Image (cartoon, rainbow, N blue to C red):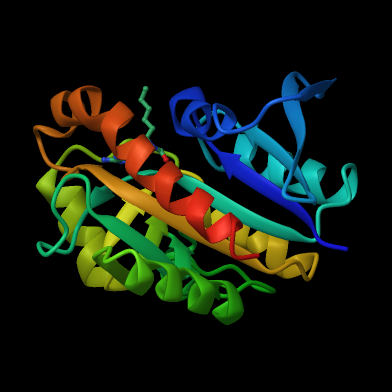
Length: 229
Ligand SMILES: CCCCCCN(CO)Cc1c[nH]c2c(N)ncnc12
């Protein structure tokens, strides 16, 4: 029986999801709250990790190892790199990388450490469900590469580095760490983001203005995907 983990980084990314469920049981653990619900016979654990790769790794590992989740879906917002991505647009990750992981001093490529890989792929099965839902609901969704790093990117210089180095379509601060955890624990996972800004000098203002509406875009799509699982 599937037990689903639904994760975000910020309360604003999870709140639109939680509002769909009643009878929520709250479990406090490791300085965080885990919300347990049952939806259409599906056991689901929902949490927001707090921002960044470390918090996201802790939450993803906890949802799998402590709560026994066997599938993990991530919903949130991201900065756009691909110019086709406008604010509010949806991107599903087919693979993710860590743009701030750097031991190039030893001749390794950006995003690589021994025993790891530059890119980690998401579940094709979950992506197929998502694209079917997008088609049924006439949703425009891009499938692409998401780059993750422990920094809010707000400069075209850093954005251009990430684009040229990883050919990434969008960027954020948690997805690739969830990918490494799920890959290591052999858990199918899926990362969905809605664009809140363009990771340029206006990113801070755009993020503040569009976080809530973009988080709702992502959450509404994710709920439709959950209903297909
Ligand atoms: C209080 C400020 C919290 C910022 C958290 C942003 N999330 C991180 O996952 C997504 C995101 C949206 N736009 C971004 C950008 N330009 N750079 C990095 N990450 C992002």
